Amino acid sequence: MRHCSVQVRGLLTRDELDRYNGLIEVGHFLETEKRYDHVAVVQKEIDILILPAIERLKEKSRQRDRDTEEYLARKAQMEAELQAALNDDDDE
Image (tube, rainbow, N blue to C red):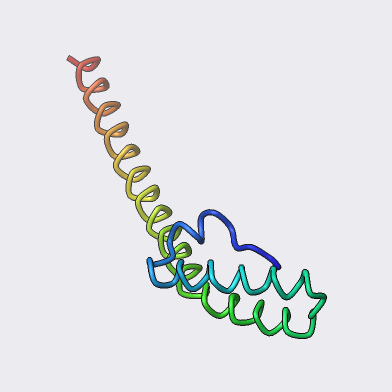
């Protein structure tokens, strides 16, 4: 059984996490019984189950990128204003 990342698991809702843990247990049991044909079905269910959490993770990343872009724009503006103020002081 393939586990999803800790980041994805952290974004699962309580219901999704409970279902995920149950499916992992079933998958491990099937592996010990060497029922790999059924393990593939369980793994596919897990893959489908975690898709919403993956999308939430992607959205968090996009938001972080937007926040970084906004921060860098504000920083550049403040540096330009500071430089302009320093140049004005030098002219006086």
